[in-house]
Image 1: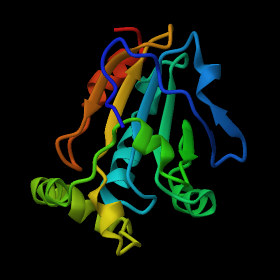
Image 2 (image 1 turned 60 degrees about the vertical axis):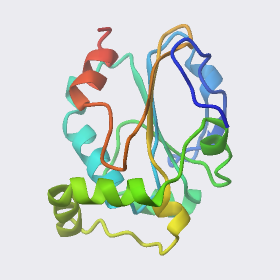
Image 3 (image 1 turned 135 degrees about the vertical axis):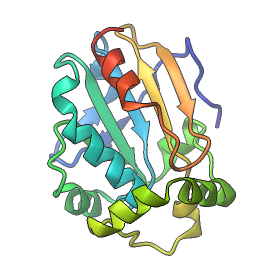
Image 4 (image 1 turned 90 degrees about the vertical axis):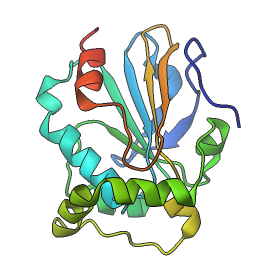
Length: 180
């Protein structure tokens, strides 16, 4: 359970995608990859983040690949992600194995801090119908991770979020996708 750091090889995994395919990280060599370990499929903050990315998708390079990994069963994830029609890869880590291997942390306190830090986002999420359909303290406690991976399969940046509302800014993701 070691955290990724700049210069590490990209995590290697193969997971089921919501489009019915199997996503394999090994196939990403030669591409810039934006990898995010989100929380659970009905997480309000995660769904708002996905929504914001989809709205700005035209600003991302066509050559970059975005992969959203969720702690979810594939069937449930497909159902929850339908409303987004995400133009990127969304996969399910049904066993939580990749979260564990890549040092994703759990902290109920940091979950609460994220909720307190982003009341407007939580309100917007609720108004859009993104309500957490779990009572699992374990799922609530997952703290997201954003990872930028270069064309050589090396980690450029690994951002272990301080809380559930902390992510690499969209402007940075867009710039990275476009080679900056």
